[in-house]
Image 1: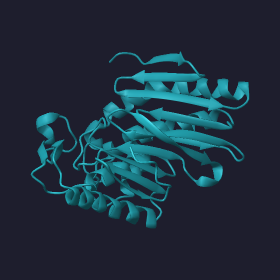
Image 2: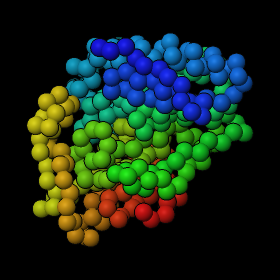
Image 3: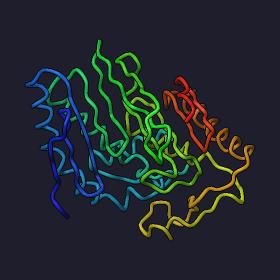
Image 4: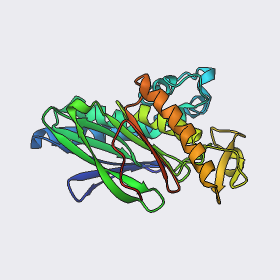
Length: 281
């Protein structure tokens, strides 16, 4: 396993990478506090990938099998996914968000900060102190990564995590959503919820091509479940029905407090709950 790489980026950001973990973070506050937070997160980062790799057999098991783990980040993954029982999910659905949460917690343990974010491949853990504001860009078109607006986060918003999932993301998807962005109180919960809502944006149609997950990735935690390979030529009624199915699950999660809001995109269609609708793509 190659050693982790750590480098300074423009705009006072840090880039931490180690295998599949690719993190960009930034902190605001007193200069000494920012230095202490960065030093702490740099010291903690090298342990994460080896710790998770040792837990992979358990982390790839469905939550229904009660996977047992010991690494702190792995425990965050399991705890986040347990909130969505009995829907099928494995702890891997929350891995990026859990890493972001753990690194943010390490920064805040080391020093008081005015604002901070940890972005792990698009799944973001946020901290905003009272009286502060943090703007996070939102993507309208995940294939082009075009920004269509910003989410303004304050301490009173309760938002501690933003995550996006869908068939254009880094992981295989059971559904057909282009992108589902979820706001929650932590990034691991947002990550798991985005995965499940994206899975629910679905419909049986001749325009959807699927294949067993294991045929695309022999190590996939989805096993032989059918994942989306291509979506082409959906009728408007099919597109609307798929989005409505995902929206129903998002609204159920929001009603019981598991998430704070979500935006679902498929083609030219959009569904939103709990946040203002962005402009059309």
